[in-house]
Amino acid sequence: MTTSQILTVRGLVDSFSEFKEFKNIDRATLMRVLEEVFRNMLKKRYGDDTNFDIIINTDQGDLEIYRNRLIVDDGEVEDENTQISITDARKIEPDYEIGEEAIDQVPMDFFGRRNILAARQTLMTKVMELEKDELFRKYSDRVGEITTGEVYQIWKKEIMVLDDEGNELILPKSEMIPADFYKKGETLKAIVHEVSMLNGSPKIILSRTSPVFLEKLMELEVPEILDGLITIKKIVREPGERAKIAVESYDDRIDPVGACVGMKGSRIHGIVRELRNENIDVINFTTNISLFVQRSLNPAKISSISINEDTKKANVFLAPDQVSLAIGKGGFNIRLASRLVGYDIEVYREDVEFDDSDIDLEEFADEIDGWIIDELKAIGLDTAKAVLDIPNEELVSRTELEEETVIEIKKILQAEFEK
Image 1 (cartoon, rainbow, N blue to C red):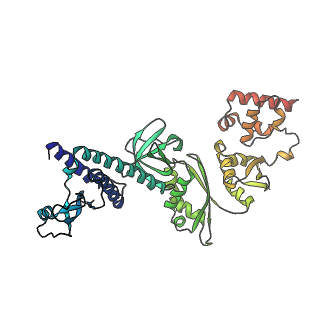
Image 2: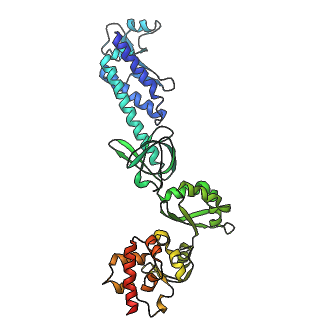
């Protein structure tokens, strides 16, 4: 065997020795692939591989190939692959007799330098494909679970995260909380959101905005949830702003809300910090829709409520000072309440129907643009007097309106009362 052949064989054995270190391939699969590759080599070299035994040691990274041949009398060999003469057999083992089976080890140099190089490349390709398939299967089974990784690369639209085995995970900007900010090397916690194959490689998408992320964080902090004593019925989120969680317990001895919040908020505080100070409302679930709507609009105090089950609509009436609480900053409270309950919740000032001198904002549609009226109604201001009662600064902060626009609107409304 030439020097180049020796180096090639050594490279093949070294490559095989590395395979036992692959992190996503189990032993049985590795052995199957290796045997398949070497059997293909044997078929090309000898035409048949049925009389060969391949012994693989994945712990040591060793392999041995043995050929079994029937011993026949000298001059009677018809197939050199399956038969061997008695003279040649006794060169392997002096005690062999005709009719027995001779076993000899096949040296690697029999395959030739070109075949060995091809085998090495085939091995690497197959193992890499297997590792990708195994990684895909592994994370497909982990969809909906929390994973922790290290920030490796930061791009404009996404972050690359490495798990503890060095696998690449992606956290898109769209799945990040608005206040999220990471530096390379920092530890990141997220949910496995989606796993797909892209150009033959697994693409693992993480999320920190999914309601499931909050659900899993709750399970980590509240043992009663993991034990099944408390059930999370539904979670709705405006990531980084506010979230509402409906919980229920079938054990009357357990206060589900108190258990989730913890003593002085001890259990919920860690989750709030993880979610960049996202306000979390934990609500006791009930099948009584009126009561559920009332609880979901907390901290606002409802005066009365009208439910239409056919249209899935709830009309809620509140005192003037409770309207802004029900709607919440940026309208998050009422939007989340509607999504949590599954009803379209409309908020009305309690005194509107009793004030005959007030005027509905819709009556100003010929003087005020429709989108402006919608902005005002979105924060619970349905009438002219309701708008006039709110200071300009508050209107500007609670809507998308400029101060000049607010002043002009109030002039139009005020003029109607002065006629």
